[in-house]
Length: 150
Image (tube, one colour):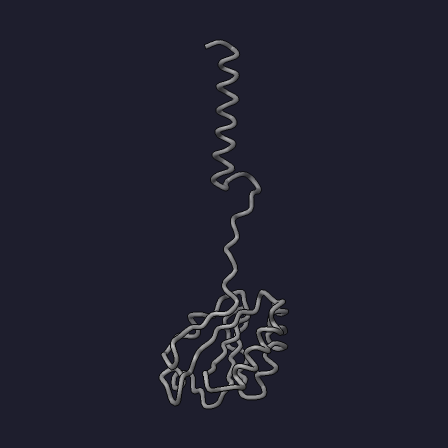
């Protein structure tokens, strides 16, 4: 092979190696891909069905669990208020649990006696606040305080 041919082959090998390194994400100093953020709001269950709320609390995020029912007008109001007040804070997640009608399995499991009912978990997945009735209006402010904690 001529000198020119060897030089072209070497250049092609360098380009191929660079492409392979870039494609595998192992180039020096390259950041690892970041996982996409979890969805902001998720309905966890069918009406009244039991659900493991703690399994849906995401580490690194403040999670507000909103226990609600179709017949509860106040639930719809405070849920909408919470969504609007936390819309600019991507580190606050909302997980909705439909307690259904009456004394359902999920209502018994979480001892839901009155609606609206919120439970707020911090970034370390610890239950920090239980809010019932009019106190649920404070959920966005309390969630914001938990976001600010280390």
